[in-house]
Length: 255
Image 1 (cartoon, rainbow, N blue to C red):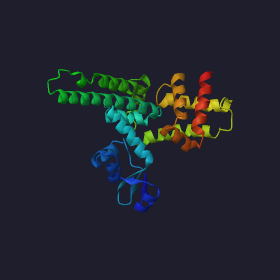
Image 2: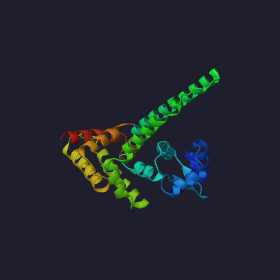
Image 3: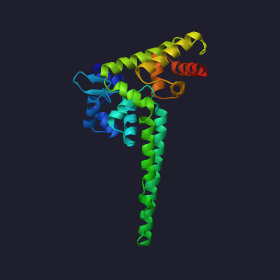
Image 4: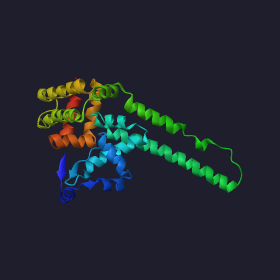
């Protein structure tokens, strides 16, 4: 973790924990706790020991709040976000659906209240209070993230790893993808490129979860979509690496 002066932090657009709290509505105490359990580590620290956060950290905080809205425990959220298979686009789609269902529920309650006020009489209609659809969707969303075989296997392998081991795992994983970035001038179907994809698949299987062709294909599609994973891959291997990795994986899965 970097140690910066306040002036340096301002120059590279980092904000303090107090500013993050005001921006997001998350208490400073909660942010400190997220740091303690490794859920949201600050990007850097000032010379005085104050936590600093950049845009990448704020995106992760958005994801945390998203899954909290879906009623996930913090431990499960950490495992999901730390998984290379995390698909922010899919998570956002689920969040939008859930919010739309909650909006419909609130509109029904408002309509009922207006009807009662207008009539001045008893209205024996309790359907507006029914939250079963919201609860069912929340349950399905949790199952989609937490009850897959791949996620359970990842959780089992990851539970005894310390923070440094997880960091090393991530760096090795991104290093394999970065190597693909050095091959962008080649045909995605080229033997050397396909060998690198095979290396990626074997690494995922050994350290994370059994990487079936279907899972690998989904990962490749995720890499090509805008989001934090796409940005991280391009940061590691240079602009265009994520898109090239997606094409290379697609070729691999055709075999």
